Length: 130
Ligand SMILES: Cc1cc2nc3c(=O)[nH]c(=O)nc-3n(C[C@H](O)[C@H](O)[C@H](O)COP(=O)(O)O)c2cc1C
Image 1 (cartoon, helix red, strand yellow):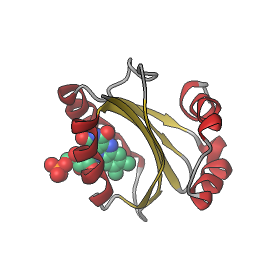
Image 2 (cartoon, rainbow, N blue to C red; image 1 turned 60 degrees about the vertical axis):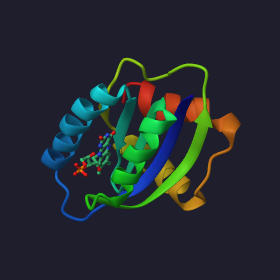
Image 3 (tube, rainbow, N blue to C red; image 1 turned 120 degrees about the horizontal axis):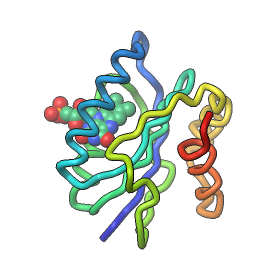
């Protein structure tokens, strides 16, 4: 069963661009092995990540991500069963989204997203060039 999840977290203090590059590098290797795809967006205070793949592979990775000290308070905003991938060309794409910092903050505070808002949100955060 193919699933897609979206979370927003707080970037830990002291995390530098090099740390983020390392996260992407390790994640993309691991995700390729697990047939997971997705993207990581970086804003001033938050990570937003979309991840998709088979449930039995996605959930253990989410559990590891939640324990990772490079960020805190991972809030899963959406978790849906889907018919097909939307981010199939990226094992773990990385995008700077400082222009979406306020929206990321609002999402994080709200703690949830209406299902009908998800397609537009994916578009704004992960698919549109900055
Ligand atoms: C923001 C963020 C996103 C991450 N995304 C992934 C991911 O997509 N896939 C993955 O395997 N690990 C991801 N990780 C790394 C995991 O948290 C973990 O470090 C990695 O899976 C290695 O796990 P291990 O140290 O238990 O071996 C991410 C970490 C952070 C902080």
